[in-house]
Amino acid sequence: MGMPLTVSIPDARAAQAHMDEVLAYLTSVDERFSTYKETSEISRINKGLLHPDAASRDMCDVFDLSEETRRMTDGFFDIRRPIGGYDPSGLVKGLAIQRAADLLRARGFKNFFVDLAGDIQADGTNEDGEPWAIGIRNPFNRDEIVKVLRVSDRGVATSGTYERGQHVYDPHAGSGPLEEIVSLTIIGPNVYEADRFATAAFAMGADGIRFVEGLAGFEGYAIDRNGIGTMTSGFETYALPYAQLD
Image (cartoon, rainbow, N blue to C red; front, side):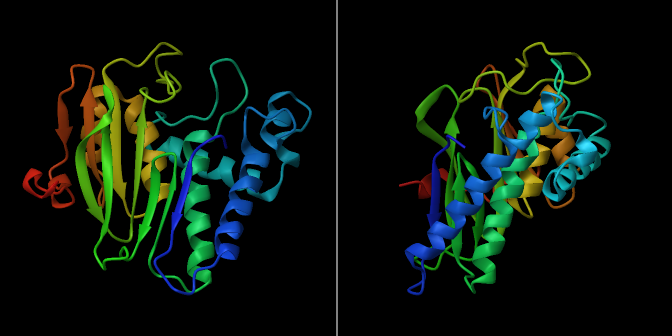
């Protein structure tokens, strides 16, 4: 996917074969869903070389989940591109991480951490027996962490413009840039749920954090273009106090 991948399994049984299995699965997802690869299934659909009705089972599942998410977010999550065709990236990455985590669970692992470009599934505890530590980067200074979270058996996803530029749009307003917020992080029951709602909430602009507040089992933290952070009411239960950051 052209993105950094980190897999940590603090278990003596963990072997390179387990890492290779995760990588092979994520590579297969990239081969099918990458909009940057000419030969991918989604690219063939976008070029009119393959009708969506003749797509693979995995592709049909993603289309169905995308439509479900569109309805749940009042249309703010929409894989239809302004230029035509489809881009399911806002859902596929989280779903792929979640299914990669399922592979590790199937191998009997209860403690692990899978991070693909900042979207994370954290199960169990780290090598010290504590919840996993996850940093939220300052969108105006990549070398600075503004929040440190402690999570276990949860997913964390961030949507923003500071890494990849403008790649999310408000489907109700066309393809213009989203400028109200620059970063929105969601903690959810798993990384798939966190990822799809982070994309939708970011498209909502300043209203996104209020949308997250209304989602049962989710917390969020948004940073606007002026560097002001806004969090949901339960977010601080996951955030380390500044006195513990050292």
